[in-house]
Length: 91
Image (tube, rainbow, N blue to C red; front, side, top):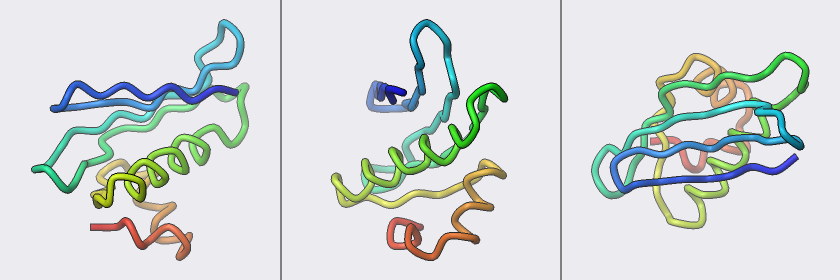
């Protein structure tokens, strides 16, 4: 599975692709220069665990850029509550 990342400076997305199929999508908007808000996560039910793979990519991006994440999406919010090891990027 490949995770593609696009960002236009105002908003962006992480898209999971497997062959020709879209496995999942996580969208975000920037909140200033040092934070972004995860707005929405959707996963194709045929691809188990895709939401977590998208979140891992978002966390890796935040760590690489030394920025923080505000999880408004219910899925992302729940994962931040559950997984202590990713809270270093929580705003």
